[in-house]
Image (cartoon, rainbow over all chains, first blue to last red; front, side, top):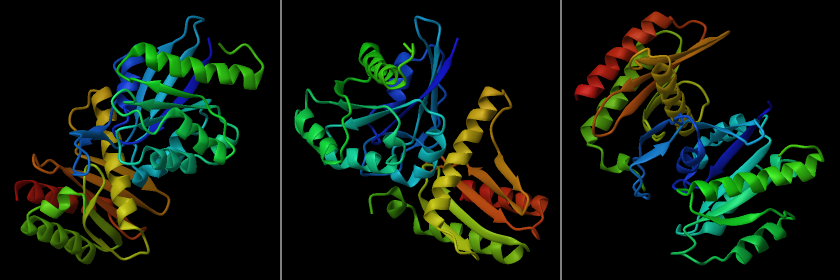
Length: 180
Length: 132
């Protein structure tokens, strides 16, 4: 059995804690506290980390970590990304500027993204269809990045598993080994 | 300012400043005191060193929250404080268990600071800010 670490990051309110909770087979560790930022309607927000576990069909185990979303916690981004095999960036398409939100994390993980497989999940696209996936893709391309982009509802286990499967497929291609 | 800080009672903010200043001024070796919301916004600070109090506020909230999780997982009860001891000082973070705006007091001490003294004083300030 092998263990892999995957990091979920992205906008405050994009659903990192929810995503990990949707697939974790153990009660996830959460470090949520009362949100006092009145620009967000969220009652609680993550200030430390989220943690969950997911065992794959082949017995390999994924350790799923989540970062706080706000840039003031970027010191934790750098800590939590260490030894990660892949990165999931979640963006909330209902926010004021989802493309700018994505840029925050592309900048925040700019060094890691040179080598680290990454998938981008865009949430709330049904109610907020713009910007489109093409718009996101163009922004990535402008940075020389080609990353899988998926619309997701992080409350749905299957959607989150699809993100993870996509990330693992990237890993498989990149490593050329038998990582599932 | 998109933050609850702007709606905190001025008397509470003043009290937080007073405690931060008092700890820095009264205890030898203390280099910084930050009073922050548990989600990482600084409310009051008193610093003697070149340090970003906004960043320290975010650090304080993270370390306090991680301490809470450690306590819960280890079934050690409610967290009172988190202490980080280093080879040249220490950092302590005390929870201020207010229902309206939960807060954290973070104190940094250099090699000349006495940990027990700082913890006693920070705990007292946490209680006073909780009950204010």
